[in-house]
Length: 181
Ligand SMILES: [Zn+2]
Image (cartoon, rainbow, N blue to C red; front, side, top):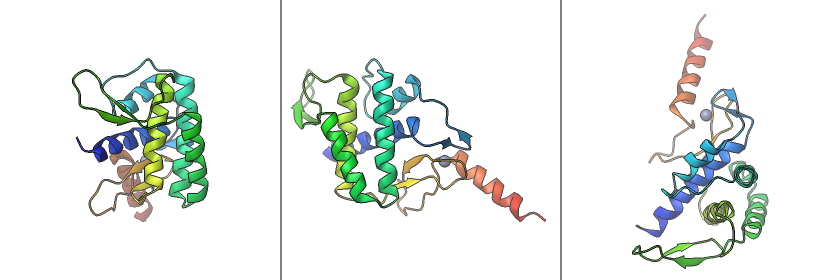
């Protein structure tokens, strides 16, 4: 596994968690309140060891991540950097080599003694910090009506406009209807 794979997984999970708690609309509907299942689905993008879900901590962190990522999408990089620094500080993110059983050593950003939820938020804040410090052009907001979801454009051509095929289809149908006399 390359160091960048780990970062990419953490970043995908950070964006997914942000979408669980941030923004007003998701895929054409008013966003439902984020729940433990949403947190778990986000974490699964980065790990197969799901901790007990501390919902209030993940909810607060998810909203903060959403705020920071939105600032980045809007080009407000200085404000995003301030937000990321605040998250790194509050989660006490700290680089540390860890090893589970026979696994090779790998770099995590979890301070000893913090809760599992805070540890994950530290990982996510670090992943976002690395993107703020390099290239965030793949981070987008969904182009569909009534959808505030953020996503990472994984297409080679960097032309992805929607968070999901559901939003893409909804937009196509709306455009088709608008063209009809
Ligand atoms: Zn969408």
